Image 1: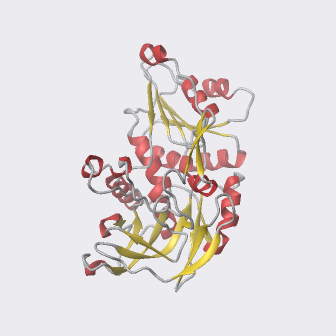
Image 2: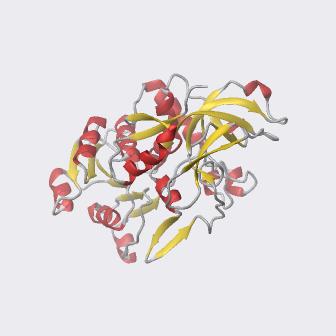
Image 3: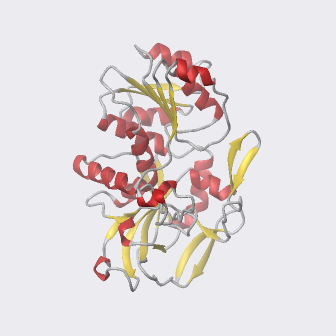
Length: 354
């Protein structure tokens, strides 16, 4: 039998339910979960909707969600069984589960861009995920070995690390005189700071309303930390930078932060919006052209990018974010702490040793 901590009613506490361990079919592999990160986007899933701004929202029911449902898309574990069409030699392999799985047939999937698939099979958002003792993965290729990286940290690379890494890859070439502003120093934002420090010579400005998270950003490698709750954070950022920032990555994604990001940029600046907090902003169309601004969204990343990220972390021994392990039965407490903004870095749920 396996234990799964599930949404039974949107917005209500998860319930622990027991099920028979599912047998893998076809090319599937069965993962015994060792650890599963708790992501801020799990709060949207838990509540049952995403805020699109202007009073509009998309519900999980609209996207075909059926309750009860097991969240958890930052999974690390061991392959303990393989379907009849899978390679039996993979049993015993430990790895990070790439959760952003598509249909496998459309043009996006054939190009390696499964995250853009219109009919996704995402683990932890569409298919039952890692708040459980076991989870099924459609193919062994989605279980990526992580070498000597700590398992709890490796779990976070499936979303937090991958999301930050993919966003950074969308930036223009940066030099040592450039400034990049990171808005939001939660789990993904701190990974962004660490990876920017490792991948570019640019100076990093971290903006957050929490003094504890600003301190964590400085520890992670930020050169400057700005209070996002100050009377005029835009003026504080401009004063702290010797030149107009070249780029902004908004890891919060709400009206105020996206507007701040647009206001920070000078000519030819780049704003990458990652966060899913919600809302909308008005953008001057002519100003995009006259200022030569790039406004771009970035959502998670590709399987190839996850392999690149794990390779980078293995080679450099990079600790992308602080990670705290908690027992899986504390899932409801952890979700509440994240909702209240108390978590520094990432909290990872761990299953009891078998």
